[in-house]
Image (tube, rainbow, N blue to C red; front, side):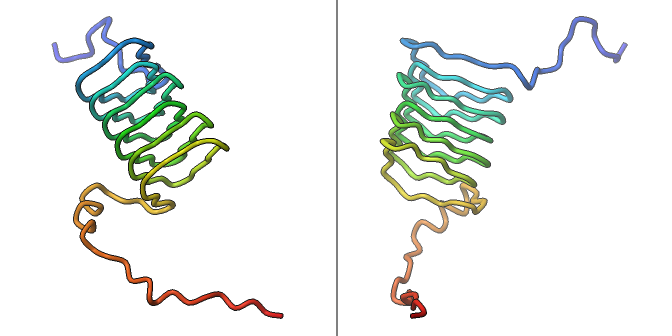
Length: 144
């Protein structure tokens, strides 16, 4: 009666969701699987897997994922738990929070980059009003 239904399938973690060029989505995307976007998304994109943004792709919203490979344009924050790769055609207009970063020659981003630190959205929002004090920075003396 309450057992497993025949024909019901668990989500496939290797599945790939794909949004083709010329397709526009207005709204948030949430997925347990990988996502490839060659079209336009006007909203946040969240994946427990990898997000691939093709050269013709555009995301007007925030990205959160385990890994990401960006070739297209992002207007929003990018939070990647592990590895973010910005290809030579990538353009990110927003802050980047990542563990590891690879930037190919020609990639562009405007914003602040926080690397190697796990930062939650709440911490980022509450610390936004804190200014950094650069007066405590001392030059490194080289031994001669």
